[in-house]
Length: 415
Ligand code: HEM
Image 1 (cartoon, rainbow, N blue to C red):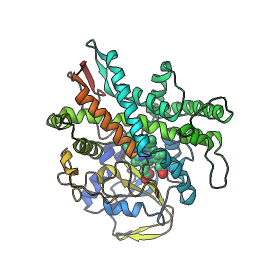
Image 2 (cartoon, helix red, strand yellow):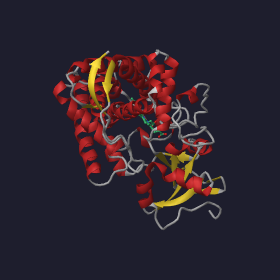
Image 3 (cartoon, rainbow, N blue to C red):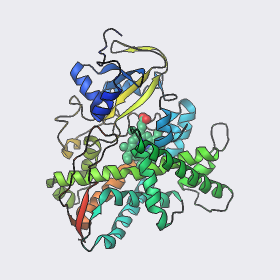
């Protein structure tokens, strides 16, 4: 790979920790090339960024997911051998199960549950005290995710369960205590879910047929076999955990409102289109998923670079969403940019690229957008509040990141 830029140094793991979300973008800009070679944790890795790179990355002839996700990430964030690691027909079959749960009526139901839960929180907040929006959002989302999925959850359990889902997400990219906290949280949640699934299978727990719990408990794979209890538990968590993770985008939405108060007027006017553009801009502009990994399925050449079978390749999500070839002034927060926007499926990739029914793109974008819209409507139109002095900065070196204070609100009153 003589013509391909190489990141400087024997190993770049330390720089990845230092640059975080900017690791790939910084280097493709510096080398003026969509890709470069690096060494991460002792292996050669090709890092790439931009729309063309995304198209290549999502070509199933060229890439597979099996073997791409480090075990440490499977043991915290995703679960071992879950949908994220599958390929081919078996993946598509499993994916249709997820897609069947994320229909527009279900998106709407979840958004309505979210609005109800937010409204129900107001009395608790009134009286002048301070609340941390990120924490409140975790609890609200955990309640609605379980309620929607058909999973019994006592009010006394909410904080602990929400904290566990959140810890799994926080473990991504972490070493040390945050990683171990994520592992313990996953082990606990998997045990809980295995028990619930067994109760459903034995008929002890009755659950609606159109619920996520029922779907996971009775799904059969391509050979007609039911998922084993552990796998069903892992995949059920793959529905619940990411709903709770919307708390991150909710916190960034509040930050965006705070930093761009002029946007409030437009959300206040009840303009649905504007609300949606605002949400899209939050998903584009603020950092959440940093990059994705896959392994080369068979040798090919792209952009003068030899991709050898088995090589690990990373696709830059954050950098593609800030690529100036796609986005005018990418570092400016401007919802209006989505007015005439027509996506190619590979240019706006906060939750992955391509067609979700055919590849690994997130099946939960509709749910994410609808819950964010309901929450913004709540924050702007249903309550008034103050934002006391606090540290709202967020580090691009930490993955995943969040405004340091978690967004503190005070003097909350119903409008
Ligand atoms: C996959 C991001 C919300 C369920 C993904 C991927 C990303 C992502 C980057 C990987 C795409 C790929 O591998 O090509 C996000 C973000 C969310 C979010 C930033 C906002 C909080 C959701 C929600 C759900 C969900 C609400 C479900 C209710 C999934 C599943 C996959 C996935 C099951 C695996 C798909 C597959 O491997 O085929 N998500 N997601 N996500 N997401 Fe999301």
